[in-house]
Length: 211
Image (cartoon, rainbow, N blue to C red; front, side, top):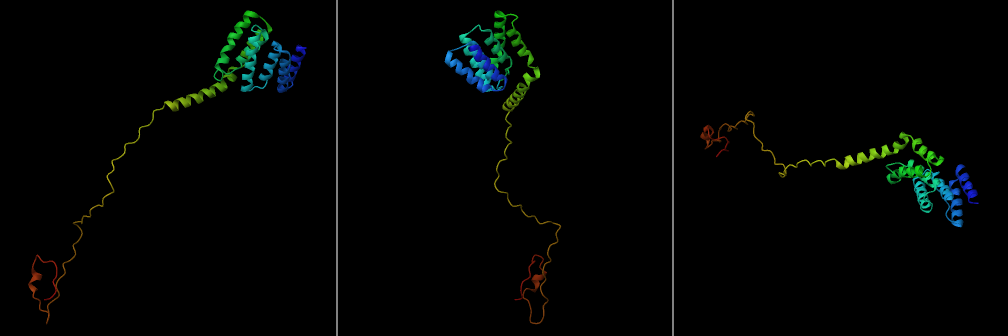
């Protein structure tokens, strides 16, 4: 009975209906209790989404399954495959558990189909595919770290405030001609000037009116 349900779950995943596959697997697990094959099928239904959240859910299913069935070859191989395909910078803990799972598989089932499939999962992910997202994250991290570690530029020294600008003093140029000294009007009848001699005085430069 459980093998038939597991086959149904796998078939739903194969035709691109992972949500229905997960619902079917969970219904059988809730009705009949834990089963290593159904837990593996449920984890594969999560992995088929190729989404970070579903990969996290698949890891949770694998861990629950291995708690109940610690030496199940299918669960060990499926978990090792998930770890091998995980980005090392995004989920370093999960990525690091891959070699441990492979080592356990080599102890329990050396030369088995599950072991070969798990080993091939890690090698089938090309170096470019593994590092494309990691390189982008590393470049962003390096840029952010360089910006954070850059020294803060010193502020420019401020000139002391000297108040409002003072008006510039006007200096008469020695080369500008002086205005001519006005001469007194000529004396005539009835215009005798009591100061006639003042016009000849060298020290007087201003004309005085007639007395």
